[in-house]
Length: 282
Image (tube, rainbow, N blue to C red; front, side, top):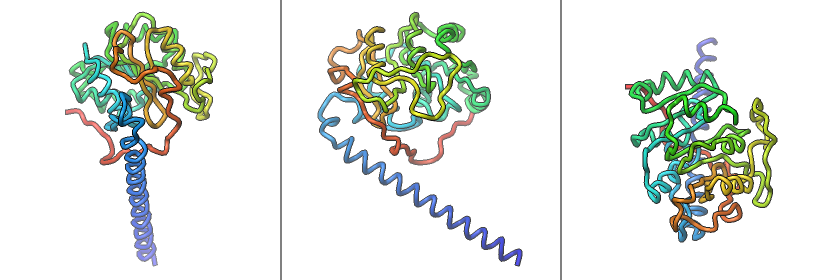
């Protein structure tokens, strides 16, 4: 009786595993087909200077890895230094792919647990000073002092901001550092024309609702004040890409407005093909 019960449980578990694999395979096929039909073969993206046709996903959440690569294909690199904050355990962010390409940079993460994982998992990159990790909760008041404590260059090639709430105010507070490219999470619930920004609260974090961050229109406005142009958004409607005005020339799709580059929320596209992402120190 006991052995039969255990055997039956094992069979049920195997069946469940098969169903999960089938679900994942179906999702991967759906996402691939959707992107092929609506992005890669869409004349809006294919026959223009837009960045979306270059999207691919290595370690980024969606297609940001490809967009970042294409931006630097167009404007070149200088110091190949990035700053990114809100990286969690480091395996799904906008700069890990750059580390594998030989870049160096700074990760800032507020969670002590995630920082512990990063220090263990990326001990090789940290040990050779390719990667610096800072465990600090970011505010508009302390952000530049964190950069300074890490000896970050005044003009890093890329800055990526994703802290889920005060992103607008943190970018606004960065005045003595002039990254060439800025990647920001925007709130795609608010369509172009809505200038939405949450009130600043240095201790507040995202509560899991649509009330966070800032709309693309608000970021476009702030970017204009800071000397940056909006050159694109990820097709999934998560990240906006800004390039410093002195680097624009005719390399990107104008006009550099929220109305032109906005992408709505397409979170259903989340899927990572291949093996679960990982890294081990040598």
